[in-house]
Length: 361
Ligand code: NDP
Image 1: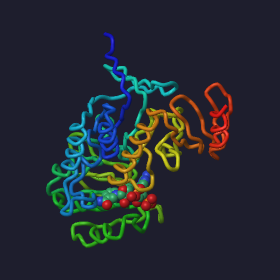
Image 2: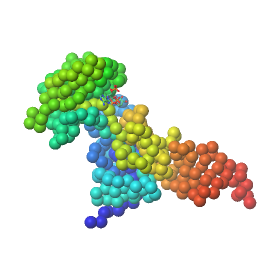
Image 3: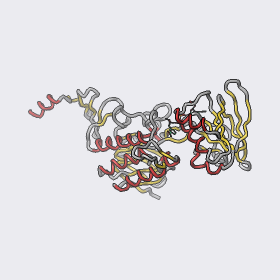
Image 4: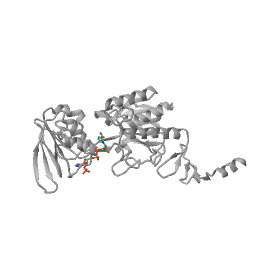
C-alpha cells in the first residue's frame, strides 16, 4: 500500500517542553508545524510528579498537567500532531525525508526535540521480559511503577538527583529502600541529598556495583548480586524490586552519521543558534543540551530553534556550527562577515560600502 505523503515547512520531532515550545512559536508564526510524537508523548515530565521549579507556577504543578497545558497552547495556534515512530531520516537534501510505517514526511526545516531516555546498566536480569525481568520488578520509572511495590523492600541504583527523587518517591509505597551507589559520595544536589538522608526509610550502600538482578518471571525479582568495588567482596542482597536511576541518553541514534554529535549522542549546534551542521535542521532540548537539562531550558531552546527555522524559511542567514551563516538558498556568509560564497562557488564581498558601490553602477 502506498504511503501517505505529507509536506510541511516545519516538522518537529518530539513533544516535550522543547518540541511543544518550538510548536507554539512556529504555529504563531503561521508556519503550521507538524509535531511527531513518539512512544512517550509529552516527554519525561509526563513521568514525574511535582514540578516546583518551572517559572510561573508559584505553588508547583504536576508534570503531566504542565505538558497538557503546553500541548493545548500549541494546538490552539494550529499545530498538527502525529503519533508514530520514525524508522529512517534522510537529511542529505532538502526537503528532508522521514519515513514511518504509514507516512513519507517531507520537511523544509526539521526541529529535533526528541529528548532523552533512561540509561540502563546492561547487566543480566535487567532487560525487558522475556530476556530479563523488566516488567517483573525492574523499572526505570518510579512514578509509573511505584504503585506496584506496596510494602516491598526495593533497591534504587544511582547517585544523582534522579536516584534521590526516585528513592524519596518510592518511600510512599516501599517497606524499605536501599540506595546503591558506585562511589562513596553522591552527585545529587545538596537539597535532594539532604531529603534522602533525612528519610528514615532510605538506607545507603556505598562503593557497590550491581552485577545481576536475580529472580524469575514466576517469583519476580528476589534480589541483586553485588560487588564492593573497594574490597572486591561479592554478595547477594534480597529485594523485591529494582529501580535503575543512572541518568539518560539522548534519543538521536536515528541521525548518526548525518548530524554532528558528541560521544554520548548530544547533537551539536552553533553557539548562538540551534542550527546543526546541516542547514535547515535545528536541535533543542535534551537531545542537544548535555549541561542544563531542565524543562525551562528545553523550552527556551525550543523557542530559539523555532525562531531560527522561521529566519531560515524567510531566506535570512542562520549561524551554523562552523561560525558561518547560511541561507536556505545555500549562500554562505564567512565567519568574519567579510565575504559571501554563492551556491555556485563564486565569492563576493559582504562589505556594505562595496555592495552600495555595486548598486550604484
Ligand atoms: P546524573 O548524570 O546527574 O547522575 C547519574 C548517577 O548515576 C551518578 O551518580 C552516576 O554515578 C550514576 N551512574 C551512571 N552510570 C552508572 C553505571 N553504569 N553504573 C552505576 N552508576 C552509574 O543523572 P540524573 O538523571 O540523576 O540527573 C540528570 C540531571 O537532571 C541533573 O542535572 C539533575 O540535577 C537533573 N534532575 C533534577 C531533578 C530535580 O531537580 N527535581 C530530578 C532529576 C534530575 P557517578 O556519580 O559515579 O558518576
